[in-house]
Structure formats: structure tokens, C-alpha cells
Amino acid sequence: MKVQKIFGIILLILSIVLSSCTTKKEQPSQPNIVFIMSDDHAYQAISAYRHPIGKLAPTPNIDRIGNQGMIFNRMFVTNSLCGPSRAAIITGKFNHLNGFMRNGDRFDPDQPTFPKMLQKAGYETAVIGKWHLKSLPKGFDYWYVLPGQGHYYNPDFVEQTGDTVRAHGYVTDIITDKALSWLKGRKDKSKPFLLMFQHKAPHREWLPAEPYLDLYHKTTFPLPDNFFDNHEHMGTAARDAEMLVSENMALSSDNKIDPEIVTETGHTPFLKWYFNAYRNNLKRMDDQQRARWDEVYKPINEAFRRNPPSGDELFKWKYQRYMQDYLACIRSVDDNVGRILDYLKENDLEENTIVVYTSDQGFYLGEHGWFDKRFMYEESFRTPLLIRYPKLLKPGTKSDKLVQNIDFAPTFLELAGVPVPDDMQGVSLTPLLKGKNPDNWRKSLYYHYYEFPGIHMAKRHYGIRTEQYSLIHFYYDIDEWELYDLEKDPAQMNNVIDHPEYMEIRNTLHHQLDSLVKMYKDPLDDAPESNEKI
Ligand code: SGN
Ligand code: CA
Image (cartoon, rainbow, N blue to C red; front, side):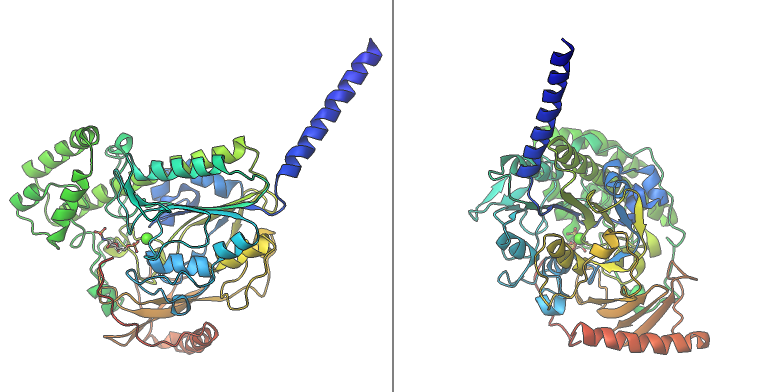
């Protein structure tokens, strides 16, 4: 009896060991990559970054990635705009080299990209969601992408056949459904995979999903200290930009006030076009979605009609409306990130999968009085980055090193054991992920923005950011330099370019900037104007 029992136990242990060996065998030796990118998601709106906004609108699932892995506090983009950022990510190069400088440009799909290289190295590759590079994706076994900016409700998608089809439902949920069904349907599970899971949300015009339409309607979000900034001590570019919550945010399409009520209460739209945008968004809804929309927004419209706020009160009202809708869109992103993380867990894929959460750029949540991005001032230049990879990364780690979106391509290639081409300009993050603190890590970052003239009228500029300073040159229709001391003035309110005590640092930064321009081979010539609608 006793012998039988012991024999039974040995058999049981053997079978467990054997079954774990078989699962191991089925797992590819190269890591899987789940690259999650949302659109315009400010780090201030991710609770792992411990900003006051994140406390009021937590993102527990996105936080999970960082808490189980690494949170990067100094992650930046090369050009704070959707298309250019995406082009930099897949090529690992600045926009003057990959040719995609402004939204509306066309990405040359025949140039080398990391998804193509991974595909060649045996990865199964997919991109699902926002693409925004005009040409169709190449280097993917499967793709299903939004045309252009895409829509929130009942969005159109471009399929691999080239056909555009209308889906039913809410964009963030649909993108996730498609991603999950691609993951489940993979035929050869011995192959490693790359999934680029890319959301439209929380891009303007911030339309939340039906259950979340009023999620934050009872919350009051704190105004940033510099919400009423008049940019007096910054420069012409900041003063001339058209991205003020007060003046340039549309009461109709952005704040969801019916165009008739906007007019009736004596407001003129900054652009008449926003009225059409408002109407077109509603037209896409089915009866049920529309009924829920009316249930939530009709009382807000009525209150606005009865008692329209004015002056600073109106600007504060607009800010609350902005935050409520923006953050409610993020709630759906967070839920859906949770669905993907759960799938990985339930299918034993956690250990061998690198999960990345990032955004195509940062976003102003009222800082300097703004929404939108484009500028090299911190909130839009910086973007969130959280990475989980249990094989390499210890849970709960943080990095303050300067990293940039061109670093993704070399990082993924290195971790997949694929040689990194010499002309890629990013640097692999692998040493940081391994917990090393290399002394020779980059000490400065380069930036170049081109889309001017254009919507929001942020002037062309390029510059350098070190750990302590940022030096920016605005050019094209002006020739102005700005210098900020980020230690003393993290909110960048005070341009110290002409302050005598900064003369020496200014000269040093000029030299360093010249070296970056050379190193990154930026010809610094004026990009031609784009007249295409983005
Ligand atoms: C649209 C938005 C702009 C935004 C650009 C670029 N206006 O034009 O506010 O800056 O996209 O965004 S909207 O009224 O059409 O929403 S990006 O993320 O694609 O670069
Ligand atoms: Ca964007």
C-alpha cells in the first residue's frame, strides 16, 4: 500500500515535470512582443506616474505593466505628432531620414522597419488599430487598421484585401476583440509573435464608450498651476500657438455642446468646421448609442443653455469637460489593456512576452493653458513608457535615463537576437532592462518638429534636451532661441536665453546641439509645406 502510494506520487511528479517540459518546448526561444500604443495619452493621466490626475482617474491595468516591470520617467519622442512618431518607431530613425515629417506625408513602405526584420527572422507579425502612415502596412502577416484618424463609434477599418468595412461598436473594444482573436487563432504557436496593438483613443474629439460617458461627470479635476499662463516669459511661438483650452478648444465637437446652443449663447466657433465634426460624430451612432448619448449630454446642454458660463468660469468649465471625456476614453483603453494582459496570463505567455505600453506622444492637460502637443516643452515631448518582461526585468523598477521612441526598434531586434542595422539611430534599452546603469548612456536628446503652417500653428523648431536644460530654436518664419532650466523651472515658464548667468551653459548647449545635428545627419533644411488634410 505504502509502496503503491510512493509510486503514485513519483508518477504524478514525473507527469508534472514532463508536461511542463512540453509547454516549454512549445514556447519559442525568442520573446513575443506585445507593443501597446495609444494616441495622445499623457503620462499625467497614468496613475503609475503619480500625478494628481492619475489619482482621480486610475489606470490599474496599465500600472500593472509598470509595477511588474519598469517605469521610465524620461521617455521622449523625436517629433511630437502622430504619423512622424509612428514612422520613427518602426524605422528606429529620425523623420528627416525616414521621410515622414508631418501628418499628411506618405510613409515609403519599402524602407526597412523592425516588423519586417522580425518577420524575416521567423516572427508572426500583426498590426491592429491606428496606423496613420497613409501607405498600407508592410511587414505584417496580418493587419486591420483604421483609415487615417479613425472614428470612435462604429468605425471603418481597412482590411488586408484593401476593402474598407464598417464595424459595429466602440473603437477601443473592437481593436481589442480583433487582437484577441488574432492571438487565439495563430496556427503555429511555436513561432514567436509581434503584436502591435494601437489605439485611437484618447485622441481628440474624446468620445467615451457608452458605459463610461458620465464616468467622471461628478469629479472635479485640479487645474494645472499654469493654466492661465499668458506665455509672457516664453517666446513668440508659445504666444502664437492655437491650442488654448480657452480659445481654440471647440465648444461643439470637443465639449459636446450642440452647435445651435453654441450659437444661441453667443459663441462663435474658432473654426466653423467643428460644427460639422460634432454632427458627423453623432450621425455615426445607432439608435441605442444615440439614446445613451442624449441621456448623458442633453442635461449638460440644457444647463449650458440656461446658464452659460463666461470669462474664466467658461475656461474652467471647458477644462472640466475636456478632462471628463479624455479620461473616460482612457478608462476603456485601460480595461482593454487588462483583457490582453489576462489573456497572456491565462495562456502561460507572461514569462516569455515583452509587454510595452506607450503613446505616440505626450499631451497638454491644461499646462500653459493648452491641449494638443507638437512642442518640445515637456508635457508633449515626454510620453509614457512602461515595460514588463519577467525574464529580464525585476518588478517595481524605475529608470530616469533619457530614452526615446527610436530606441524601440533596436531594443526589440536585440532581444529577438536579430542584428541591428548600423543606420538605425536609436539605442537598445536592453542594458537598462537588465538593471544596469551604464555610465556611457546618452546625456542628451534631439528633437525636430516640422508641421507649420498647419492646425494649431506650432512653429517649426528643433533642439536639445539634457538632464537639466532644454535649448530650442524656432525657425522658418522667425528665428528665436529659448532656454529652460528644468531643475529650477520644471514647468518651463521662464525662458532664460538672455540671462547673463546662463551664458556659459548656453554656449555649451549650442555646441552639443551642433554635434547632435551632425550625429543624426539632420540637413536642417526647410521641409516643404503640406497642404493635405490630415
Ligand atoms: C486632428 C486634430 C488636431 C490634432 C491632429 C493631429 N483635430 O487634426 O487637434 O492635432 O489631428 O493629431 S480634430 O478636430 O480633427 O480632432 S495626431 O495625433 O494625429 O498627430
Ligand atoms: Ca497622437
